[in-house]
Length: 392
Image 1 (cartoon, rainbow, N blue to C red):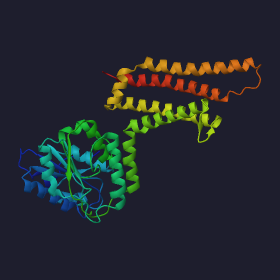
Image 2 (cartoon, rainbow, N blue to C red; image 1 turned 60 degrees about the vertical axis):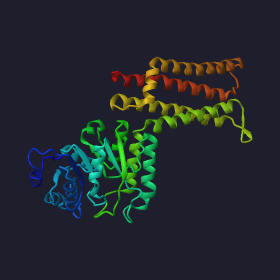
Image 3 (cartoon, rainbow, N blue to C red; image 1 turned 45 degrees about the vertical axis):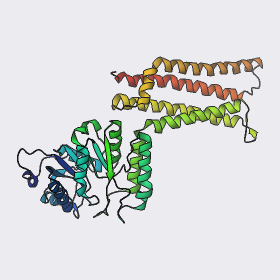
């Protein structure tokens, strides 16, 4: 558990009864080289702007004396032994007293002089403010892999999935109103915390503003692992977007499989030849897997809606229009079609005296329809079970 009580060095910073307007929260893990200067710059920015505020350092288990240095510089120190960028921020947020929270790293990559600008954006009606570093990166401040590959790809992916419109989704200097934290319901403990905050803000329809800031070379040793943390961000984006993780791939596989199967059954020439048994088997597999992935996507949407408070307009429309009985009827109809075809094949076999049978393509089609019908039938029940939690 984190320790959130005030440290003695900071207790007398503000007169009794003074309302804290801004809390500057700084995560820290072994930043002895820069933490004192970070705290001083943050305090100076608050004082110069006449902002009643505090500086909170969320120490994440430092063993180099960082917490003592931060306290000596005048910070409130919160001890969070559970490692992780998100863990540190969650502990810092829990300790924050200000109406506004400004976030920044402890490595001097961000200019604390921007604090008044962040506050002004919040005063102007924004509920969250995010800096944009990408056009103001100082030489040596960001590795080329992060600048030209990792950050642009992850930011674009986030914007495609969640339509946030954020230019620099992983900028570490940002601000938000403290009263929006319950709506964000932040939970992640690692570097993906930055993505979670943007995604939750988009889903909660927060008013988000952004403006350009400079990004400077860091002091001390970087804690970022390019591929591990990049994957954690991408994984987080995927698992929070069932549409792109399940629905789109599942629909494409099902459609492609159906087209392949129909092409074979209709004996249509493709690329100068007629495709036969092996092609229809491949199409059948695509259809079966595609339908299963679609079912998983619908269940993921249902779980997010009923258990995590997510809101997805498309899924809301679908669940308002379709009920369990629709799925059961569709599954039964598809399965029945497959059974009828299987019956026809059996009839042909009987008519030929139980001899040689060469209806392989129809047999594959029949088996596929029966399997898909069973998938739809029982997936409909699973969706209905998940929907038992529904209160609307």
